[in-house]
Image 1: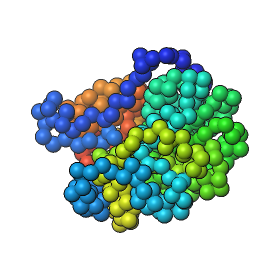
Image 2: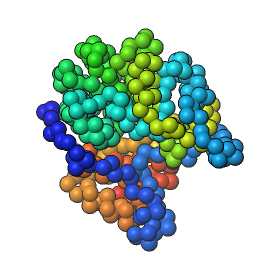
Image 3: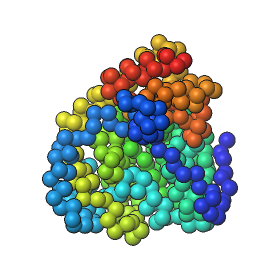
Length: 364
């Protein structure tokens, strides 16, 4: 059933985003030295070596403000994706792009459509802008695009399509997207959040960039360097859309939203094909290992298109998550995603994955 969230007029309506528990906090609280974090969908292989080298070189310029337009970074992304530089906007992580989009497009008379059990940052910035939040249900743990299309009204300004969806890891297909887009009116901006794009190996996954390349003005494609490129710590995300669609974002963005190190790292990371391929391969092998482990433990899980796996623990999921913390293994409870019986587990290194499965076996 589609849920209509009460339109509230203050920050009291906000539920702040709670990130994954830091390693240092678990070390302090439980007196542990060896802690692994499999809660925030970070790259367990670290960062792109080329990006690290570029950041080291850029350190010499930290006394200067960065290029507020991120000229070279935008041109590098445009070349990488075969779009024009004025079709690229960069931000302080994908979260920054979401914030800019909501600031630019929403007001108190607006409506925003998101799915239940999806990325909660959409909800936060919708509330900040005093817009009305409409949540549609999942369908087989994936976004129900038919329900999202049916919820559109003349007041709808934004629809966020998280694909693959976080935290379920499921995708909506090219055919589903095509049918959905045929029903979307011109006044609605569809934001395709593709944070895990590089990790998807399904032939059914849609090529949403073609909508931008065809000049469709009510489409934005959003991606990030935080996941497969291992740059979560410098916060770098970007959007692809027509210049007219991006113009309002540029008017509301911070003067120096993307710092000097992030710009240098992003340019270099795009050139590091070897690290990209290594990360994708390691993720594929790690997911398969976790599937085998969960099968052996008799646990239900969803086959993921991202770098995490959603596993069903049952009513004791939060308790199990806590007991894993005590063993130095950090995973993500999904109560805030309306999935209280599930845990989201990031795919780690071979050793981390083995330790997680063993710790689960012990606490279960």
